[in-house]
Image (cartoon, rainbow, N blue to C red; front, side, top):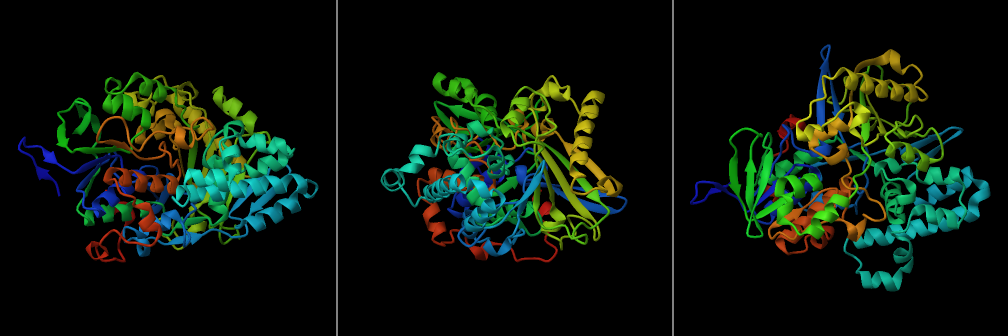
Length: 558
């Protein structure tokens, strides 16, 4: 719990702004290490992009995931497994694997490709699909697999850069070069390239700006196992909240931070409260921002506290492409129809690069990726996701960054209003219908079974997470913004740290949780990663509450 200082204000050892999984993971490890840590979240439920929301229709309830649809690093040696185990939570989060023979199915204009677990099986299936390209495919896959292995070992602290130079020079030569250069060197066909990049919606970067290490890493991430958390996406956030509270910290929702107080070059605490209302000052010598990177520097702190070089660098950083998401409740059980537990990526053409040309120009692309996933297939026993005999279905696509695509002049983070605008609603509905049309390639009678329908645009994403440009992925993981070119965890302001998708560990659930451990390590000036990878439990399991059958992740996250 907090102390009260001589000035009458709350005093904490550390404050974390934002309750995305990066912030929650950072806070949980600080609490487990003896730092009394307060997490402040503007929304009414913790979890950031990992949260869920619930809807009721005609007495039937649905629960939709905002950001967790399938994740890797959940096997025995996974970084997510280690991060949870280090807090004593490994038995409290169960992961269910997707279909091992096709955890994702990639649909193109004239063929489909099922992506299996394992590099060897993946290679064999590519050989089968492109029998005339074996000589081109093998060196590309060898390079990608090798770079992925090295990148993973670096991320786990098992290699130093000096060792990389000696042992795996290909990583240094190719890691930050565009993956399209690798394809071109081996004259890989456009169709084969499209398959290898078929899941690139998981990071949303145009192919010619995608570092080979990113393309290789995302492939390896899922080829080693793709999973979904039993009980839905909110479970991970709720268990981290549980650990924070058990280990002496606190998580407060409906608590927006308006300012990070900086005095004489160091962080002193935060001001909390809604704009236009009297706020509350809370003191702490350590402040960690899990908020949007640009808003942290320019809104929460203020450019006057940073050097001009830092300000210019942050201004120039490019945000990742955002997503448009449709949430459907169906009165039919797709599992009973034999639909496999697989993700579906529908691409309207093989030239993915040209799709990004359209998106950057602010033009919706009819051929852009359409991602279709059914939580009910991934966790069929959960009654939170959908009623018995029903299906929880989600459809997503890449969307332009520009506000005028949605008839919006000012973003909601700056106070802009949009939700009731007839033109905004019209355009949003056009996107919904377009995605449903595309999904009918998989489910021809889809429209006949829709009993609940809603959607979230990039403007919606900005409203709830205050993310610049409405992206879910932070700054873009492009060649000029990957690895050492990213920002944090330390800043030039003493006591101010960063965590989340824009830091060096990158976006995605594994990325931000790994980043949370890294940020906590920097705050404590102690390496936490190696102990937890070795199986050490830093949290006191006996302090955690007893497991309950009626435990509800969504309610526990308030």
